[in-house]
Length: 308
Image 1 (cartoon, helix red, strand yellow):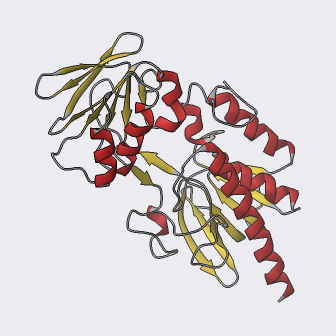
Image 2: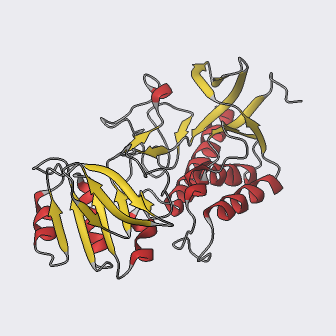
Image 3: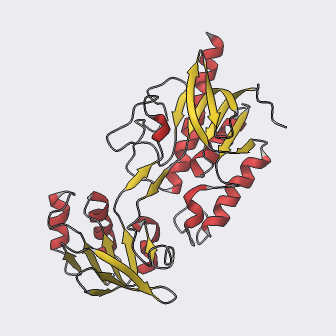
């Protein structure tokens, strides 16, 4: 049974690629590591991907299998895991108190926060049913599977515009669907899309339903139009899981933790990695890199504290 009075060197919140990479590097630095994860043997959003084809050296791997490989590697090194949701954090002297939903309190010298960010959903019929079967939330991840096919991108920000440009070089036809007349994203990107012969921009267009059989075949709009597509890319924003960090570390206007690739935050001893931090590209490879950097930063912090 786990000793609640133990003072951990590193407590990692979240066991997606960022958290597991942090655990790997922390264990290799001979630190006492505990990984907290709210889902049983969870490995993050990677499990939602039927196929991951952009992780170096491991082409055409199932997302679940890749997550299990990450998890197994860390388990072999002896990192400890505990299932439970963290619902509070506070600093006390030179260490942190981590409150768990079951009422227990854990103590640690450092925290590496890897809770991630979730894609905002459209909330229309068929979206959940065809997730991974024509509905995607990442054009960079899944765009290559739609080479030569017809796709739709739903959204009006920079991510949606970038996704449409990216897909326009792969797909036969790309529909950019936005509920308003004006785009929130950059005017230059809109102009580039307007100049693309295989891109059709539909404004004041609101998705109503995603339909298909085994996979997506069409996107139905509220005005009655039906757009024939093989894939629908939803790009209506991300929601960082940082609610419990307000007042603890500095967040940007969108709620992401302000930190560079070192994972160092505004609060000493508190580090961040993965999709939850401010960054341009949110992919498995960048999450793994973040985790390694944050663990190294945490190890250096502990050495400085012990030497002082």
